[in-house]
Length: 146
Image (cartoon, rainbow, N blue to C red; front, side, top):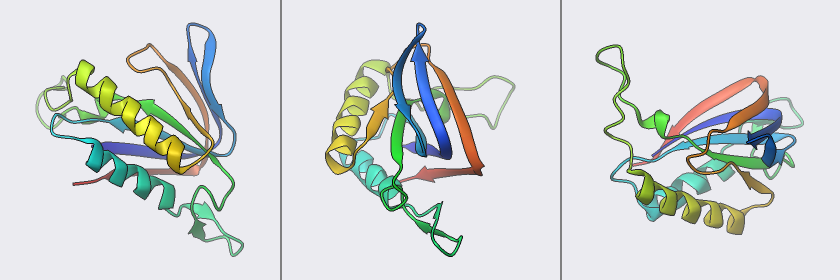
């Protein structure tokens, strides 16, 4: 399971010209699910994301998490994060969780995130999403859990 986190000033997801999720200051999380991933791993990752300190505190250091910074969370499913890219010139999506299983797990993780934090917004699983964001910094981190 991988999460690419981007600290943003604002972000939104648009599907078929309709905004499906939108936050102001906060975190955009691009979430990739692998075949062996499960809800326990996902909860561990969501907890880490919510506690991860990469917002500036009053000393200008990365000392605050998203709640302390008063930000929002925008979760976007992105199976391409699981691609193997070490060999050849085409990504191998073999490690990614099959779509029907991934949708169930993604939706469970959204519910869990919403139970732990507000506001949580989302894209639409497997849709052709247009993600608009203003990266703050830029600050981007790749998180994984075992």
